[in-house]
Length: 332
Image (cartoon, rainbow, N blue to C red; front, side, top):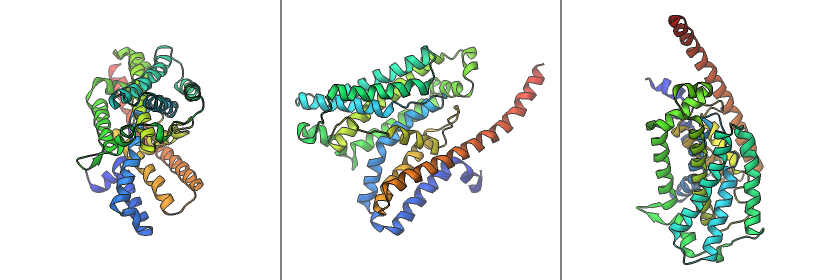
């Protein structure tokens, strides 16, 4: 494949755009290209990357998980309150509690969507509010601040291993796991099949309800883990933690080429979409641009990405439909 044809594909083009954006910001503000600044950019992007990866699996099934940030907030509050109440509790137990909390909440979404066949946007819009309300009920509206948390609890995400923070290593593990699930397992292949033709999936033996159940559970599991990482990274837990972050996660997926119509998406695309938004989020303060412009710019990028996705879907339809008609006529 020629270089020109490769650049027409979404992932290589998006990778070039991310690098170009970093360099352009660096020309305007050289401090942005310093090793410390780039390291902070990489660390800050990890939570968004992890959430975008599991959201990608949800979206390819023609679903959506609007509750992901609320799950993160509730699991993070559980982790923070456990650490504050039981300082001697091993960190692994706290991380496991946050992850299991997220898993249970995600499986509830999956049961309502998969087994009761309720619309994903309605279910997760409802649970988004319920889970966010539970954060307030659990905490009584109070904050858990840094001086209430054990030092080990706060330090773990940014402690380094082989020169990289634990946050980055965890993100890499999640990235590799999602790449394996999406590209090398029957579970992953079934998700794409469900997204492409949900009504036909059952006829070819795909257990759609079970697949959706565990897909939303996986989304909740990673959100729960990110809940601990978030409160430890920023050393505070409060009722509005990650408020509105679900839209950033969905935006990263759309920018990365994951089709909201289902059946189309890639792990690389979701990762690059998250990195693109992270670069924007880190660059605008360096350039002393108002946060309001960040929202406007992000919204503009999403609209452009949706237009590109729609154009790609039309092109795929023109290529697939004639072949479908030919095979239908041959069978007749």
